[in-house]
Amino acid sequence: MPEETIFSKIIRKEIPAKIVYQDDRVTAFHDIAQRAPTHILIVPNKLIPTVNDVTPEDEALLGHLFVVAAQIAKERGIAESGYRLIVNVNRDGGQEVFHLHMHLLGGRPLGPMLAR
Ligand code: AMP
Image (cartoon, rainbow, N blue to C red; front, side, top):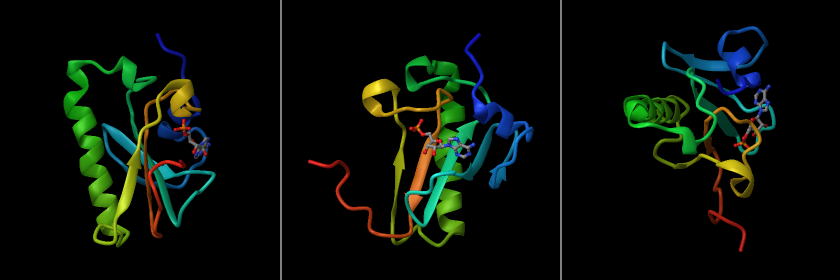
């Protein structure tokens, strides 16, 4: 079994977080170190450490992350202006929390995708 992270505790509401959406498959909450006016993490309730651990049975769940991301972007009024979805993987990807999650960033021009 993969080791739980702080995100499992947030999902179970054992520690506080600013949750903006939750259903039986995903939980979305504000990133504690906000890097844009909107910075929300969308996390599967199931513990999948990284994208490398994804299996075909996760396809619907991961598709649901995008549905929830689009819904949150619309609710926050940034769907038309635009936003960025990021999934970091392992060391070179800059992943810090080993519970797969999607960053939803927007509310200002985000600039080039990567520093050159
Ligand atoms: P990553 O580098 O993709 O693994 O991103 C992990 C993100 O989780 C970082 O942006 C952190 O600021 C965020 N984070 C860590 N702990 C918490 C927490 N307790 N509540 C909300 N966000 C958190």
